[in-house]
Image 1 (cartoon, one colour):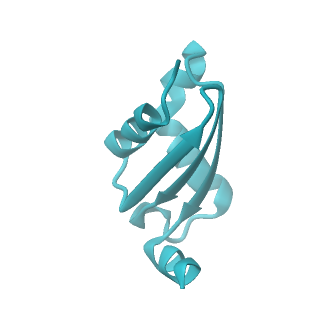
Image 2: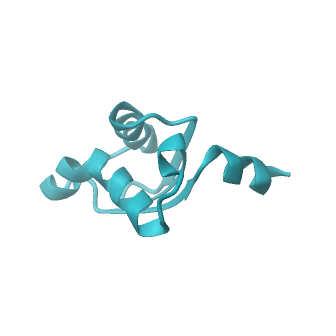
Length: 81
């Protein structure tokens, strides 16, 4: 069974992240990703960037569903307090 930590590893190895956290039940996963790469990108472009890091696992069927919240460091700080 796929573990959330494995998905975190794929994401953080594929792009620079200040924070990445994934939760899930083995089939469906939710991620929060904070990266400077998201600056100036809309939500769709941000998600495409993250999907680029897990594309081969989606294509192989190892990873079935990943929803995500993508934030710049500034957005992350504003959301926390």
